Every structure is written in structure tokens, then in C-alpha cells.
Length: 254
Image 1 (cartoon, rainbow, N blue to C red):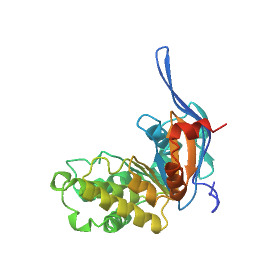
Image 2: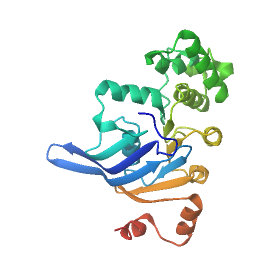
Image 3: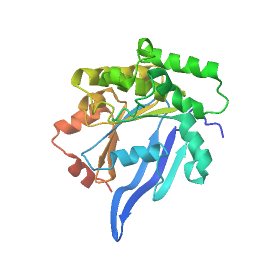
């Protein structure tokens, strides 16, 4: 199915996620309804343990919801078999994590190229072109034969972004991408994601940092596994100035 130009990249309806350990249940997410629009920069915010990373993993088809429906470019993910789901993840979703997850025995080129080796229909020449283009996009083309240990934390995260971009994904999902970086390196990664968004990329970032929220088109706030609201940064600032906290806002929801 080809997605319509104006349809959400990701549509979540009534999403719940329950983790079980014996007789104990932890309701990580409850009744989440959320769309991610093409070309949007979405920030997911909230206190630690509120379900942000769990939500991102469901958006990226890394896990299955306990209830509800996730549609990716119009396709209901729950109806896909394991192979089709894996192929969709590899071809249409790019991931950036707080840990860089680079393979120390591989140089920069091979780290970025690795996901493309699992893509059918991409030959060696196209793979090389994609890798070099992605490294150029993140300003790391001069480090193509360096190894992760030879790079700073900020440079390693740039390589991780290039790896996510090389497959030309429909959406880039980033989980606390500046969490392991110093202030200057974090600013560089933020600027990079902002530029990619300005070029038309759809980006969703889990973050504790208010600086990221200012770059986002919308801020989705979670509290105790529930979606409190989804607002612009200006609206978020007005609410913050009013003295209302997330729990007061959540109490106003039906």
C-alpha cells in the first residue's frame, strides 16, 4: 500500500502497553492516541519512567502494544508477519539512541553501511553512494576510515545519525540523542537534527532537554503512561508560566 501524501507517517489509536512479572502488572502506557505528520518535528517529553521510551519503541515497531493499533504509512503493523515487520523497520525507520551502538571493530564507513547490507535490491555501488552521502550530510565524510575509538562522543553520534539516514527512512526516531554528550556536542547534534528537519525530514525525539522542545513543531507530554497534551512550544511556555504542572493538566483531561 502506498501512503497518501497527507496521511500520517505513524497513527496510534488506543495504545496500551502492560509489562508483566509473575502476578505483577505495570501499565506503562494507557489509551494513547497520536499521529505523526509528514515533515513534522515531534518532541516527546515527561518525567523519568513516564513511558517515553516505551512509546518510541512502539512507534518504531521494536515492540508490540498490549492493546490498540499502530499504523505505519497506512499499514496496520499488527497484521504484519515477522519478516514483513522487520523489512518495514529496516527500510522505512531510522533509529538514533543515547548509546551510539557503533561496532568498535568496524570503521565509520562499514558502521553506516551495515543496515544496508540487509536491504535487497541495493548493490555495492549504490550502498557506497548512500553511505558517503549520509556522512556528508552529518559532516563526517572526512572520518570515513576512522574507528569509533578514534572519535569523540559527538562525532560518534553523528555517525549514528548517518547510519539512520543512509536508508532514506520515512521517519527518524531518536531516544535521548544528547543524553551521553557534553553541552557543546549536544548543541551540535541538536543543530544537525534541526537542519535535517528544515530539509523536510520527519523526526521524533524523546528528550528531557527544553532546548529540543523549542525546535519541535509539537511537544507531546506524558505522565504516568498517559498522554497529557500535544502542544506547540509557545503553548507549552504559556502553560508553564501559568503555574500548571503536568499532574494538574492531566487532571483536567476526561
